[in-house]
Image 1 (cartoon, rainbow, N blue to C red):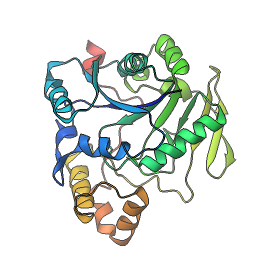
Image 2 (image 1 turned 90 degrees about the vertical axis):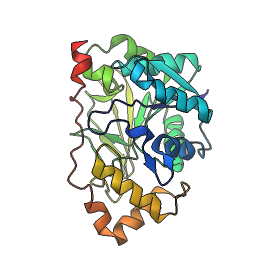
Image 3 (image 1 turned 120 degrees about the horizontal axis):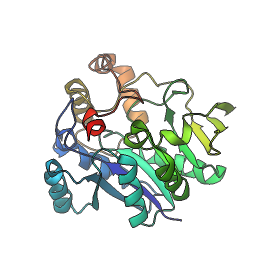
Image 4 (image 1 turned 180 degrees about the horizontal axis):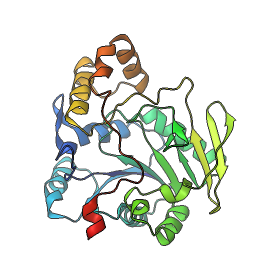
Length: 269
């Protein structure tokens, strides 16, 4: 069963346009994400999934120059973009990654893939929206589903937010129960088996994603501390912000998007 990471990326971010190609210590952010994911031992491949909109032509050209696999799909129906990419690549398991998470950790990805395979669930994640919560920093987000489950969601999800945010259809009616300090599980009313990976202690209030200028400054300082390398772990970043609390304050006030927030351009299309 092929496990494929699909990195969703576009240049039309409303809060930080072009962010996925902005420089972080000498490399575009997307290159940081790809380089880190390539260190995963359990991924059989990865692809950048962008849109058919002309505004993303420079992103496609960048991927071509760097030798990254890149596929194009719907601008606003991101669930369809994922499904079509997974189908073309014959993925048995799909790992969802966003291109604005340049400290995504390959070891966390491998741990999640292992738990997904061991548990036999349809969907696993290391964060879910309220009321479920997160215990990993924002920016280490990953979701995994089987292709069969993705195909069912693609066929049945009929709300705009379900299509734009890709995987809410799997978990939005779940009632999670604690299995262990590091795992929660549920079976949803739709029959999906869901697994939530937790961390003890809880670091869910930390923000390590890039969605605003303040986020970008935070990430540039993190990479500068590590000399422009990209082989550090998320625990290395944790140690850095714990010993340098002023770093975390750079973007602590930034608001994270909610599950029901969608791009109004898609709603009007």
